[in-house]
Length: 269
Length: 164
Image (cartoon, rainbow over all chains, first blue to last red; front, side, top):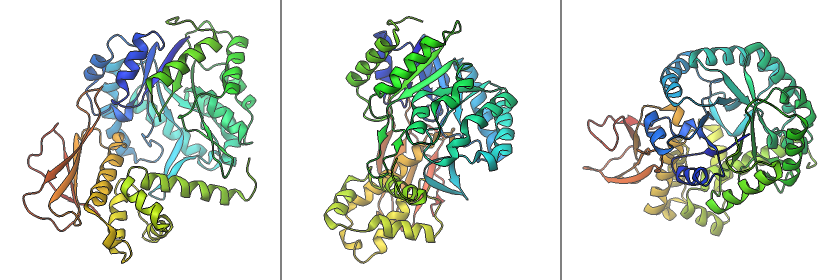
């Protein structure tokens, strides 16, 4: 198992480098949005010899026109190829509605938008000329009830893969949208994983994917039980995501805690 | 999970998220809001909905113009708060990197800060952050506009575009 940390922006990259030098992280999952303006060699020189993965957050590939998408892909394709990432991932979410940005990223209406999503996934993959992973959403609305079933069909029909976020699945369960067990058929095939902290919003009591708190013990325990129950010969990766309140000591402590629970020794690939 | 109609819960979350987006990077304005017990968020969001604003990176500039039109708020707007709102706009712009992959920097000018531009240079190294800059304009400006640079740290042959 390779354990990674997310390279959210150039500002946090020195911390990422430190964690890798200390052997607490094995690779960096770079958020493409915040590095895309830099030539790949600048990223490489900041993280020499470090395995990289690429996480695309706001490509808005489901919302942009095909011409816009083609233009973006023409820029991204050589950039991705130059960095030789372990994987490239994106999100199946909605940022805008009727041309206006939503207050927060919204889950898709899988029933209504299903065919469009599948078509766009195929187009985006072809334009980028890479295999893509899609991350499961931290559901707060009833739309999430259909998510796992839709992902199963989508991944099969588009030959894409799952980036399974344990905490997002737990959030959907906590919010009484869908149990984590709905993901079991897909999890067995997943090789790349995410985990992060979340918060309970005090008024609605909904769990919200905030990436600003330690990973909940229950999530960690269930993740550990899963990895023990489904051993894999293939290389697996797990990224511990921290987006807000990024402090080296906290991050270090968190990685040590997760390594201990999962029984992963430092630098053990 | 909380009780009550789902729509109500989601509307509450949306309002909370919008409020955070509007004020988390404008501490001076946020402080004014706290002391005044004001209804800026609700009133501005109603205006934004009515005007069908896209709520993209220009939202803080719309907010600035709205505040400067409101008789209650106009006298309380300081140059510090105006600068803060323009900074919030360029920072928000910088977070949508996949919408302008070849652009290196942006500067915006507001009619409410006529002799100054607020700009942002994207990071030039993978381990150094982006940089907010303030530029003195050669002559006072009385419109809202922005310019993009496709070269690191270089404002040459500036092409202004109307902002709103």
